[in-house]
Structure formats: C-alpha cells, structure tokens
Length: 408
Ligand code: UDP
Figure (tube, rainbow, N blue to C red):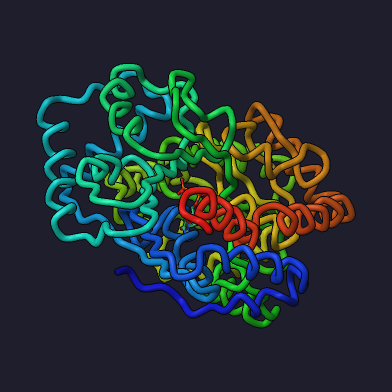
C-alpha cells in the first residue's frame, strides 16, 4: 500500500462548515467498513496521486477500509501506457505494436498476482491498470478515467474498449469525455479535487513564502507569472515561454517561473524538460525548476502564492488540478479553453480564457497592471474552488457512488 498522510474529517470543519461534515459522516454510515481499493500507477507526480494522497486517509477517517495500491511496471510498460494516454487524448499518429500490447497485458497480469484486489469496490484509475479487470474475483469494479477521451484515436480505443466494457461503472471528469460508443454501463461525471490542508495548499506565512523565493533567487518585489505542470507537450511549456516573451516587451521587470516535476510513470519528462530549458536559453528572469531542485509541495505552494498571475496554457487537459490550486490561493488564472479548465476558470470572473499566445500575453499584462482586478478575480476563485473542487466534496461524491454500488 502506498503511504498517505494523516487526516480527520473534523479538520475540515473550519473550511467547509459543520453541515457539510455532518452530511459526509451520515453518508459514510451507509458504507461503513466497506473495503475500497484504489489502484493507480504512481505514488508520486500528477493529479491522481495528488488526490489519492488526501482522499484515502479522509475516507478511512469516516469508517471506510480504503486502501491504495500502486501498479509496478517496467520502462517499456510506462512508455506504452504514455502512448495509450496520448492516443486516448486524440493523438492519431500513435499505433500500438504487438510488443507494446504484450507488455501492457503482461505487466497487468503480473500485478494481478501481487496486488490486493479483493475489495467491495475496486477503483481503477486511468488506462495503466485497466486490464486488471480480467483478474477480478469479486466486488464492484469502477474505471475512473481522468483524461479527455472525447475523441480517442480509433485504433487504440478499439483495443482499450473491450476492457472498459467489463466494468460495472465508469467515472469521467466531464460529460464531454464520455466516448460516444459506450453502452449499457453506469456512467458518472465527477470533478477531481484539491486538499486545502495539504502541504501544497495549506496557508503559508509570508516569511515562509519569502524564504522560498530567496532560496531560488526569485525577486519578491517584481511581478511573477508562472505555470506549474509536468514537462509534457500537452502542457505547452513552450507556449508559456512565448507568452512570457510578449509580456516582457510590455513589462520589463516581469519574471517567469516554470515548475515541473518528473512523475514516476512519465518517461517523456526529461526530454521535455531539456527542450524547455533550451527554448528559454537566452531569456532573462526565467526560472525553470523541478522536484530535483528541491521544489516539492511546500515550495510549489509558496511559488503559487507569490504568482501575480498563474498560467495554464495546456493544449489538452484532463482536468488541470493546478488551476484549482492557484485559484485557491487567490491567484487569477489565464488559461486555454481545454479539458476541465473552463469548469475552473470562468472567463472574466476567476481568470481569463484565451485562444492564442497574443491573447494570453494581453490578459497577463492587464492583470499585472491592474492589481485591483487581479484581487477581485482571485477572491472569486477561492469561493469557486470552495464550492466545487475541495476534497470534502470529492469524498461526498465517492461515498454516493459507493452507496449506489454496495451501500445499505
Ligand atoms: N505538480 C507538482 N509539482 C510539479 C508539477 C506538478 O507537485 O512540478 C502537481 C500539481 O501541483 C498538481 C499535479 O501535480 O497537483 C498535476 O495535476 P494536473 O491535474 O494539473 O495534471 P496531470 O499531471 O495530472 O496531467
């Protein structure tokens, strides 16, 4: 089982209020003791690991026997599953060779022998552990798909779909992601969430924020714009640099902070990190930082709090938890209109949605210049996240799902 932090549902009462906590506790009564197994493919990096780290201890604190199992795989396996991931998000250039299919199936077969899959509910996250369904013994099985599968590569979807069809229920982050040829299975739409008490999101004192900026030589007295995202083509780090170039022409003291981690299940990370560094080579005031430089959860938190404007210029996105993370810190977000981003960035209310680098730069300049507007959007962002994207809401949604499948 992967390691998780200690949390109690009552810790969240000051944030979400007593009534919300009462509702969660009474829903949990109806599935008390149920063994809920979550399976994903990395304990670190990316949104799913981030959610499970908080959700599982919270579910345990309300009486569920929630557990977290992490699939183990080889380099070839993760290369294959990244290709599947990209194909399901619409990359039509990808073809799976028979070797790739074999390694995908073989690794799942091996994991089926070592993982504990005997749950009342088994929640399988994303495509990596999807074929484990072939080794189900009992319980209800749910595929929780976190990516945008609205226009999948047909060839790869044809290979994946027979596994999907064996599940008892499916969960997607948006209605639009549900592939249109799915029939006869319960389908739910649920938002992912952030944890307001995690190191990534907890309140930080200004001296802590200053120390973090100092450690990385970032000037706290000049505007900072930034994007937090894995180094990945879909996250568009080069587009962020192009935007920065344009902003810099108008506001010469602006700084750019790009933060990206290397997830254990993402083999493309290093290559894209190098590409990003090269692309920014001759630019001043650009900081490209990773977990290898010591930028972990608290540092990400500090940087996000110091951002004047956060960017999320993804080309494709499942949900984009980093958007909620920035909004929760009262920072307006300028972002592309993709995936789950428009659920979080309400144009002109919590940030701005843009279509081009030019538009992105224009909105960033506006927000840097008009502090009052940035503050207004930031305040709206906090309220929006509080209502929709906190882990307590996520837990409530999961409890309802468990009740529907195995509840009293
Ligand atoms: N993240 C991080 N450090 C980084 C880059 C990302 O901790 O350098 C975290 C980020 O804060 C967020 C998660 O990884 O919690 C990324 O989730 P998101 O849904 O935005 O994207 P995904 O990586 O799952 O596509």
